[in-house]
Image 1 (cartoon, rainbow, N blue to C red):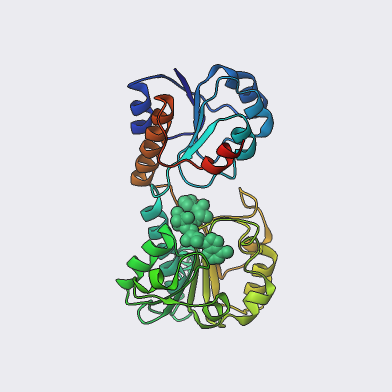
Image 2: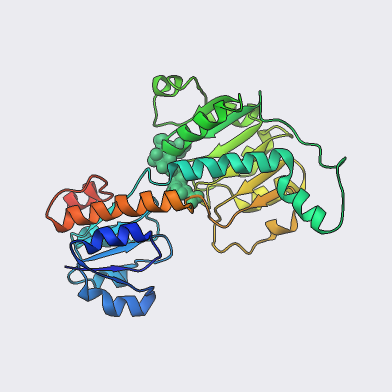
Length: 315
Ligand code: NAD
């Protein structure tokens, strides 16, 4: 069968697909993709390819869409489900990578590492201005205690941080198993020194952190979002940082990417361009898990990570 890969994925994943099928790597987008997709039985993407309704409607032979990663907001899952096309992904493949970036952002904020680097390049030696804090003994509030939230918690224990978590879906018993205090969102926001977000972007989580939430955070709090843009209201974040309602923020994800907004005017914020899953190891894991799912579907088997299982069954 014929498979097209339209975003750069690990070579290991492509080789796995090639063992059984004909594979073409071509970064097709929009109309071009809509024209050519009809030829293929499977497509593998990351987040750059947008699989819109129009493109999916042209996919006459398509049996499966594979997302090497987790988020499927770039795929019209409803249209795929209506057409009986499986949508599969690779949850867990990038968990460790995202968790390590989160810890990296916490250290960057606590010790002003990106600012210090810029300052030296500008010929300055701002030793006094750049006194930091230790992570040790600080309270870490984790919003969303799923795979990545749990991994961040595990890593934070090496720094002797004290964790609390807010997750309305995970039971208190489950959270307590990790020696973590289950709390309400309000309690977490009021008491955390570091707040880190690890929920999906849904109607409930969109702008879950906005003006009201920044108002109750500690003045010395830092907030980190390595989950999805839009969970933090960027206008509210701008005001909170400008008015020093909180000490700082670090973002890996943005409401619109690439990010071009006014937050770059501020100094108490650290940016990365959606690098959470961008590690060699993470890409190999995410790519190969996704390739295995595609192969299962093409072999007529049920995939393990089937995003539209319920939706497809309802059509
Ligand atoms: P997961 O599904 O394992 O965990 C998400 C958790 O969020 C679940 O425990 C769920 O119960 C919880 N949750 C859902 N709604 C909530 C709400 N309203 N309030 C609080 N908690 C809520 O997912 P994961 O693998 O841990 O991924 C977490 C996030 O990280 C996702 O948004 C994912 O897209 C993102 N991600 C980002 C990158 C990146 O490059 N920065 C890479 C991979 C994943």
